Image 1 (tube, helix red, strand yellow):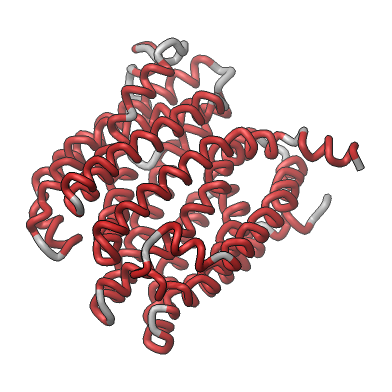
Image 2 (image 1 turned 45 degrees about the horizontal axis):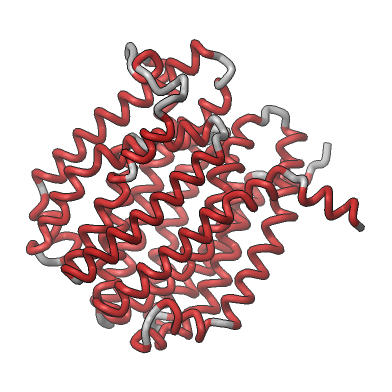
Length: 427
């Protein structure tokens, strides 16, 4: 028995999961305080508007980085011992990030009024997009450097910087919300990550790759083409997941009210708070690990091992959250949000299938399966919207969570079919 326990605790995935727990707990605590204060001051309607802004910001964060961050993780992991190849991937990645973040930052500044009208249905919030346009370069560079750290498996530095990001995000959000209420919350959401760049640079300043030789050089068409498949995958995700949420939230606002949309957004935020335990581990450990593996039998073992660890953990977490849903709402939000209790069951069920799907979907990212990845992202983002429209018409806002559950169940089935030879063929 003790031998089995020792074997489990010595597992690399468990080690990274444990190591990132401190970062995740701090992220949860700062996220909780932030959500509680924001919800108390601006209510469900304000939460819905912030959800709109976050979806939009995630799109332009991806565009500003050229969508190459997962590619940076993969190629740094793969070529960290090949100095010549490493330089090419690093300096081309840096130049792509620099160029595109400047371009899209200027674009946001030029169209700040129509963007405000589109996202918030009111042009008076134009200044939020001015802040986003100015900070996009710093935000993109910070994410690029973090991707390089992740590729080198510098877990400690990666976790420390994430802790600093969470703390700065909390300070920014609380200070601005207390001072400027909704306007402050909107500004905080688009600026706090850019400030973290200074902390990131402080931690990486002595690394051998943080100099002109590795970060600046000639454009290489072959390297750019390799990054391009990751750009396509990331841009499709940026154009599907946030956009589908924007469409569904907008539909709930038009069909019911902005408060009803706020309950749905609040449910999404609860999901994000506990799923961060698993998504952080996937990003820090799982993606670089899959990128390194070149033998299918080893890859199968890694995937099966991950399922054995993650499936029981996520199931137990979801059961606890469901049983404590009244406490979760009262702790995270206010009495105004008690109407969202009916959303928990289907949302949590959907979250289970989402994580089970991602364990396989990450293989597509690690192995540059761009066509398959793009096809599944587009199909299931579209089906989520269609299912939501259908179910909402019959069951109200609960229908949106039922559509979410059905969509990710089908996504999981499709992932099993795509990787059936890897998962079910032991040879």
